Image 1 (cartoon, rainbow, N blue to C red):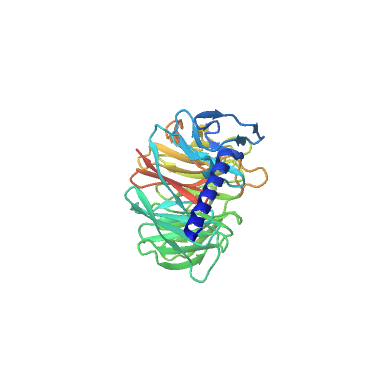
Image 2 (spheres, rainbow, N blue to C red):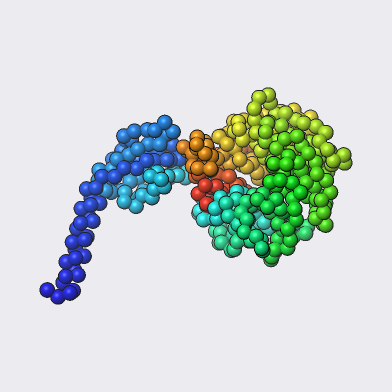
Length: 416
């Protein structure tokens, strides 16, 4: 028997062995899905779970190999061969897209570890993704309806992770990024992406960066030192440090730059700084009881505020602090952004926390919600994956992007 015949016999033997294995082998998987109640079919036959855990994971046993289809009414079905199912910690994660609606997924893209936020450039041709769990900021180029990874911005002489939020200074063509590990603000050229300089945040754990409408002042919220750093945008010199009596997160200036509204994460409160007096002169409480005010938007005399603890989006009168409307949206609301036309608020819900550690995947997937700005009614929802966190809308209002914090990826949608 020559070598060619022996090789052919070996190949046939292996083929028959693995074919028999895949046809007859029994396998088990745990399913985490969005929607949570989708149906599972094997070769066209509905499968019922053999058990459901307390956190909602459904366990399935497959006795024969074949095509597994995941489907639900109102969603696009997806299919896999049973031996091609990918697991993570023995869990199969399945997310379905809507069959109708304005939000249409274009693609998904890998990012660095723990993509904390995402921002479009003012022209909409780039996206910036600060990484909390890795050193740097991932940059993507938009090419029509698709994105292309361009590069990772790094700070010379540093290897620290902990990049949190960013801000584009259009007047000076600068990209500012906060780094809470080093308590610094790193500044890059917005056009060339060349590193320019770093300045101390003058506070502990800097988070959000925002600029006054007139462009003269740049404010930074410092999480652990519970204060706001106010910088001269031109000279980068610290002008004031203003304590706010709690943990500051989101910020928004009034149109005339006279007031700065700050969400206080310890409670459902907005601290209002009078920029002439450089101190907090008012405190707006959303409602009684516990809460965690997180992000804030100013629009036409109103404040739109997310509460992470309660999972609500709220509308307040910017002059009086009167609560005009509040709506429960989803668990662990993270980021809210306003569409360029002002008609919709988009909100990212991270989903329920893992009971042992919120930095591990929880029992369910998160979601992105599109709300009417007038009454906060939910117009549409698309599912995310493990902790949708960063969220942005393109300047022309045509695209929505969000990051899945624990999956090191982001999802890119067209807004029809």
